[in-house]
Image (cartoon, rainbow, N blue to C red; front, side, top):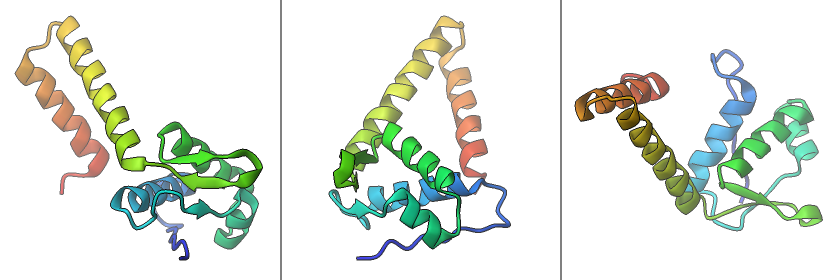
Length: 125
């Protein structure tokens, strides 16, 4: 299995974020199975025409999100991304709901603000 990543230099999104997003989506969809070994930072950077620091930044973000895990010299692998991502998202949603309540927002106000944030992040489509 090969890892197919396409970066758009004209996109308004930084290359590391494009890389992070694509790997995350591939892992969550199952296209990259749990346990799939990712290329080394240097090798992947060379393949994609990026600086090694750019790939390393994407890998760090993916690891923080629980999508991948680094096993020292053994390499970097896809983790159980769906479960980890769901847990992180649920925790963030819970934290937001609690903060909105503490700020005195009504349920409808809190939901409206959350919907606005999701529209801004994902686009209006």
